Length: 105
Image 1: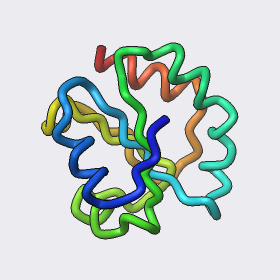
Image 2 (image 1 turned 135 degrees about the vertical axis):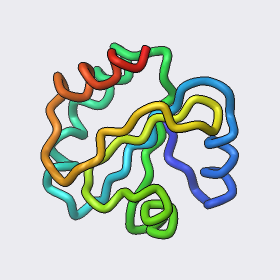
Image 3 (image 1 turned 90 degrees about the vertical axis):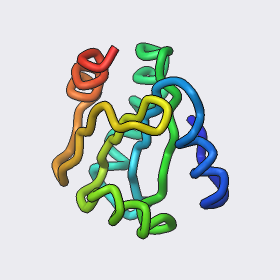
Image 4 (image 1 turned 135 degrees about the horizontal axis):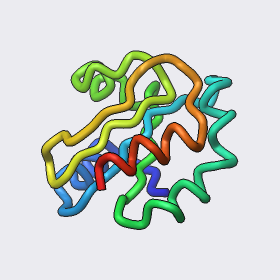
């Protein structure tokens, strides 16, 4: 999982070719911490996606721009176009995330 260190790095990831999953999280978020242990397996199950962890608090302007108010949330881009989103404030299971991504393959 890629964890951008700057807004510039994050912007360059948006422009990259391929399918990217932007996972919006925050360290204080219990539902985010719930899914963290499953992330390596989710990435392994979905190798056609590049996973990018976005700290919602660090990149609040981007979260607002993309209408991401609940976390954990996923926004999937192909090149720089959104192709799917799983955005709400509810806890997400490994199965729910894998099912969501399977619909975007």
